[in-house]
Amino acid sequence: MKRHQVPKDEDTFYTLADIEIGGELTLYGRTFQIIDANPSTKSYLKFKEDGSESVGFPVDKFEVDRAALMSRETGADLTVRHNIRKNPMKNFAEAALGNTCDNSGREGFLKYDRKVLRFTCFWDDREALYGDMQKFKLHYFL
Image 1: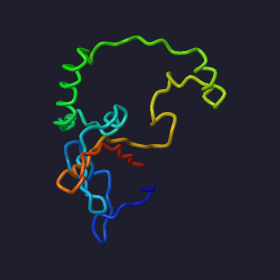
Image 2 (image 1 turned 60 degrees about the vertical axis):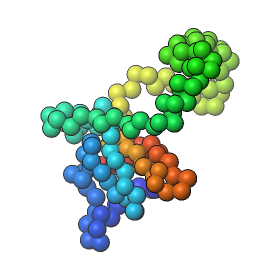
Image 3 (image 1 turned 120 degrees about the vertical axis):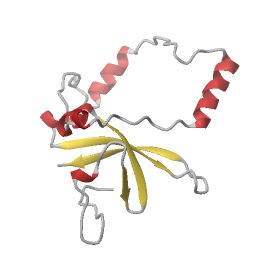
């Protein structure tokens, strides 16, 4: 979906007041549940003062069962880090493709970019044939 005003009803559009953590948002017939927002969005909207905490992502039974099966089958613990070293040629290849600056010191969207708020939401379509639960990032341009 491109950047535009999304109609809520025939006469009104969605505004920032319609988006809240733990709430639902219906866009073009699909209902998304908003579960979290990035830290700069939370500080901008002052979610902490309203008592709006991030809601956990629903647990997918298949992923839990698959992780337990793989742990039993391979004997590997999924929490163990293997500390694989990064190939020094990878840094050169990334620089050749245009990644020449280190962005680790950036403050966030609100300081360096246009005013954009980012929410984490999901769409549960498991009731449909071949449906699935899909995770999305919702960008709200101020």
